[in-house]
Image (tube, rainbow, N blue to C red; front, top):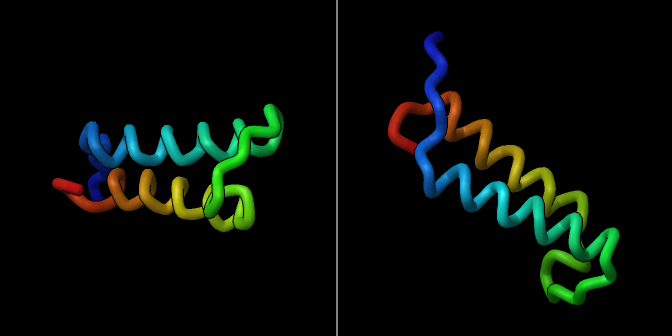
Length: 58
């Protein structure tokens, strides 16, 4: 299996989501969905990045 670098939109979406999780956890920022599901939101960000690496064109 050949890995590829993720496309810019998938990379940015995962970084923004992970940044929101960090902001909620450490800075006390209130984000409705992310604040209630920190672990799940971080897992979604990781899976989005993983999908961008494993599947070409995502």
